[in-house]
Image (cartoon, rainbow, N blue to C red):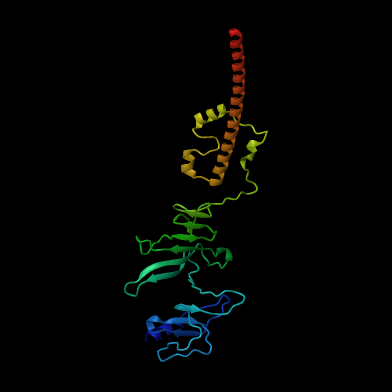
Amino acid sequence: MKRTIAILCITFLSLHYSNAQVLKEFKFSGASANQTWVGANIRTSPPAEYDSLGNLISPVRVPQSHYHLNGLNYTGEMALTLSNYASGSILAKTSLNFSHGDEAYGYPGGKITSIRESSYATGQPGNAKATLAFYVPNGSSLYPTTPAMFINSEGQVGIGTTYKDENQFSTGNFMLAVEGTIGAREVGITLSEEWIWPDYVFAPEYELPSLQEVKQYVEVNHHLEGIPSEAEVHEQGVKLLALNTELVKKVEELTLYLIQQNETITAQQEKLTALEEKLAALEQGLEE
């Protein structure tokens, strides 16, 4: 009886290739109704033989999972389509749900949801915008309403962030937003052609601020010129490329200050040596 119900349920499914050809051939195999495998267009050679219970006796190719679509398409892709026809509804959702357990003690295992960002009712391609959201049970909630990760129609990726701009999950001005700590072995940053790296500090025409000017600026503003203040960092955050550029500039300026100081110290040492030599000569003359 269960197997009959399963077959009837399959008749209500519309499974399509990406070129909209409807799959018409279904094959079933399994030890019992509770372990039924469903194969769509699973080829066997010679033709498969089934016993009275519907078990596949002599398969050459069998489904590789409990549901297996097989086909031949040289110009496109195989696709399984889930469709929600609520075209006039903003935030209409279509989900692929995962579950663990049986009918009595089933627990959600997460879901992938396509969330519309606008109405499709006009039929215009420009309105066909959606966010893919990934929901994962987190221990505190079996049915979380906040996605663990999302990708919106602008290509923005959010991980652990809940920010919304009107009806759209958003990362603000960022293509990737992470609420939390990111771990990486290496972070590579590339410069645009317009970005100026501060090697100009070493150019002969560069006007290096005097240390007196630096002192006056720090006394008034309580931070180095070009470096954001604590209040600015709390309010706006930090852009790593801009900050690193300014830090390199400060290091290069500091190198010039050290070179100047070294030249000054060397000159003073030479004068001191000369004075010591003169003093020694005078002392020798007095002794004679």
